[in-house]
Length: 464
Ligand code: URP
Ligand code: ZN
Ligand code: ZN
Image (cartoon, rainbow, N blue to C red):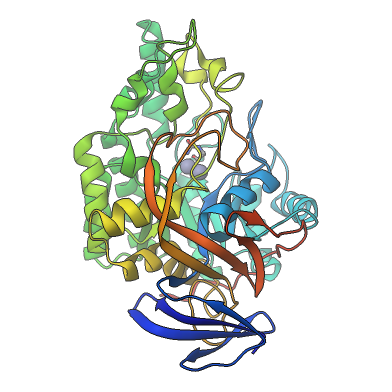
């Protein structure tokens, strides 16, 4: 073997296997067992061996209107590596009127020289012309798309286009992802609020009630039911939304969902936090503005239960970072102008490990299923990513459960002037991060070069 991890606890979705060796040859996992011999030996005693994290929901280097995300691929992927994520799927937004293929070609070309970890794209469907292009996506290695039912007059598509898209995607083995909120009613409530001079960040949450998420999930699930088509609800935020997911699953509708750390750790009260900067005292909450918005304590608890019970299938981050100064502050005096999005690519795994596995008894097997195995299966990477098994890419985390850390803007690797989890203490994190057999990160040192990440050519959905 080229490399052997010795005497670790191997974690898969099925179990934890103690005192095991893991051997690597030519960047692939070649053997799991005892007494393996290799040219390079890495001691894994007292540590977990887990698959590299897969984050299937990121927005790096992306424009939303006039606003461009703070993180590009380099800074976002550095954060990902430090947190133990070795693959991610980014959203590809064609410009208004631009074809899917042109947009995909642009992003593939732009990213391939700079990527540090493996990456793929989901295409965003913006208009009816994109329907004709769906049939070309699979041969380009893209097996998922996203439809927005929110952001009226920007990204929102109408019900007919949504229906046609889901139908066509089904026939091609493409998974349709849905941003499920009623954008039309939200738009009306935002205009009402502004008319009443309700301008502070908290009104972002008050104009987007959880009922509008639940109703939109119900609508999307109805389409999936009529068409017998697969759907994936992104960034689930509420208890009412979760109830709709459970109802659809119980009815046998092929529907899956993810939630994100921000919905597990914060509530709408965070939108009312007080800041220190003169003139921005009532605006601190803008850092927590995302859509759907943060909810209430009972929603947060329900989402944790959904992770443990299995109603929620995936944890992703929806990492979409905007600077507080200069970007979020564009919404000072008008909450509707605050760019929507929060970071999380760097913190996801340690947060889930410490506050989930250690504090809430989320089984470690489930941690691996939610963050690695199931995302790989849903998004066309099975057989290659997300699992420690022979023949899979050697994307490996040497996970030290004793590692202690407090998240801070002063020590994170993403490019942002705040850390959403500032002051959060965690135990457990990646001591070493390996991608296809190459060590990217070792005890705080980055050993990675631009170009070490590869485009993920994904196969069609085959879970039905
Ligand atoms: O607030 C969010 N989630 N921003 C990113 C875009 C999206 O809707 O996923
Ligand atoms: Zn969304
Ligand atoms: Zn998103």
